[in-house]
Image (cartoon, rainbow, N blue to C red; front, side):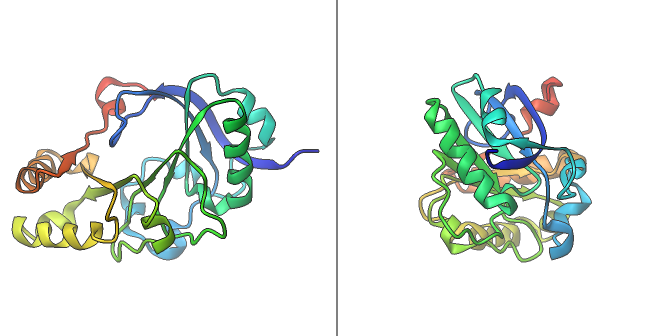
Amino acid sequence: MGKRVQVIEVFDSLQGEGVWVGVPMTFVRLAGCNAPELGLECVKWCDTRYAWMPHAGIERAVESVASEVTLPRCCVTGGEPLLQEEEVLRLIAALHGKGVLVHLETNGTVVPNVLPPADWIAVSPKPPAYHVSPKLAGVAGEVKVIIDEPLFRLGLERASNRVGEIVCPFADAQVCLQPEASGGSELVRMAIALVMAHPDWRLSLQLHKIVGIP
């Protein structure tokens, strides 16, 4: 029997966030998240709570999951996918064997034993500490910072300095600032102001929520 992975869902959609927004991908959402046990504040506004439990979803063979991917790009997400590190490595290998380009989304807190050979790694550091493994920061193509209420309350200048500290370890990554969805127009305006003050940063809106797709 091949290696098995705990899967929440597999579906085709457009990438809704970050650098690759609007690009068609197959999404593989894996089970398990370490945010609650780490006390990360993202649990307050997480929209994928159904993926938190390590045994949620269905245990499937890696090869079976890979066989469902028919688009040129696949995004492996969670939960926190690197909690299933060995399985993720096998899934990436299986997808590469089909000629599929693999995007990996992670909160950056799991220190990988082996750097995942994904074609694109997007890291979203989470408050309050925004801690990210240096291993992952060094290979990330994208760092996505959520502009939430605590960052907003800092005011523009202090928020700008704080975001600068958060993204500093990501020397080669593209910086995306994304307003937390439930925060309304104030957070959007803050994110825009930060991007306008830092032209090498960019605004990320959740396209999939705007247009009503998965």
